[in-house]
Image (cartoon, rainbow, N blue to C red; front, side, top):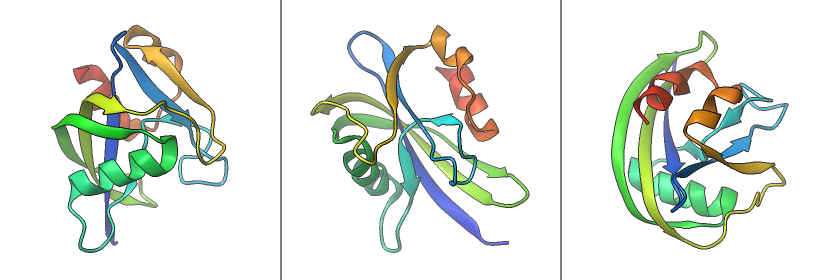
Length: 126
């Protein structure tokens, strides 16, 4: 099975809230909430992919970020190498540029949303 590299931005605002968005119903793990991110393209570094996806999906530019965790996760139908970045500084105003709903949620509030299983360990770290 092919392993896909995915870069994910865990964006935290000055109110200590995290940016989440709702996955499209027809996407893998569709209908679940997620942190913005996507596939690392050929020739791209994981942090470059995170910055690009953040701009494409929600219209913000990461300016202060660090790698939080890298983990492998096998869903059975998809094998993923996940790169989670904590974004503590950004410019722009977040909006669902692909028509997806977005929300700013407190750390405690994340438990109220249904995330893909691969995200659970990083949510526990936050």
